[in-house]
Length: 224
Image (cartoon, rainbow, N blue to C red; front, side, top):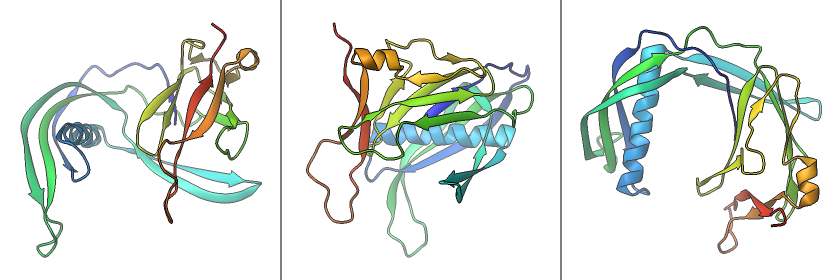
């Protein structure tokens, strides 16, 4: 996952809304269920206060159309919050279905809208050194952007654990100017031993029909 953040101004007048979040926690502990429900309430509140922008992007592989990704984005920031109601409950999709445990939260959110309109000309181009990897292979990437922005690269593995790859102690500056090429890790650092290698998640081999995820991690370090 690569995040590109543009510096921008904020509107003066915030908006206050009531938002709800519900999360099934059969495979989660209570703290995780609460956190996810609150995040869901944030998303619902920002969408209710500010609306959404629908974007579409086409994917091309080997010169041929490979698919289209359509997504809705809400632009805003929660600057104040108050929990009005929270509880563990059960929910049934239909009267005949089995009840499932849920965590429910109702919040009052104050949302700050972003000033201006999203820039449709803002693009971030990311290229990896390969289109596919096997365990032990080295990975690096190049990033270009059409607007000044801050770049953050995160790895989300099959267990939903998040590992920051960039910025890091060797590349702390994550500001990217238009036309510049950002290499992660840079060639000079790779030659000194700083490398990102793809590795399988720990655990037994996957069974039939189960695809074992990969995590990208910095396996080799600089001397000293």
